[in-house]
Image (cartoon, rainbow, N blue to C red):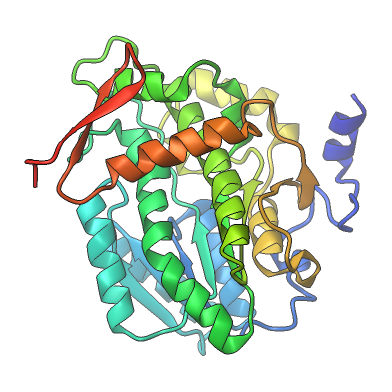
Length: 344
């Protein structure tokens, strides 16, 4: 009850910010981002678009990858109209396609730009069961696996940038508290829903699984970055509940009534972007890694979300799924993988 009251009134936490803080407010003391290059996925609308707007206002050079180049160009135009001096690069990227991720990274590297910030923000809620071209359930492929490969391929650039510029690199994974809704065996369930005509597919559970994967990815990657002694951190955020494209796709009487009844709990888009902006830029978070943030303050994760064994297990599975020249084939009965190395 106390935590709910704090949320409703926007009471500030230890960071000095709370649920009512906005992206602009939490970046006021970031010292300017004129020497920073940031890649932000899912920046054509909603939280991602607001994050991009705020970072551009603070001076960051932005790379906006998107499946729709027109949508990305429109987002760029909106930012430029407010900040004429903003430097923004639009690129094509379909996160559900591992080949598209590889092509994007190859093209980005050809620009010889530094990379200080990677904000893995893009999200999809697939209402109908679908399988990606790589044989993975579509929600998981877009929300997690594409970002896993994107991060993996960009990590060398981020480490090099941090070393040469002295500016600590930051990776921000945008998750959701809905990850708490998932229970059970992560790999087994993914195997079940990554089959055609899956009877086990439930849109909400699949979405929760993908968001749990974001949390576990953060935990395992932080540990690996520490072992490598890099000057790069990774953290995970819950932006809060806000009405964006994810929910507008389900508009109707029931959805509208639900949002009316819970309207006091909803954040505005500027408020929802605050935690991402805070974790990406605040000077007080230097060397903070492997943490989960909500309302611009560090928060605890669930037992499953903090399970190191589960995080390492998901990492191993992910490495197999993104391997070149192989296509992961799940056995949901044994929670193991076979993979056909003959598939190109």
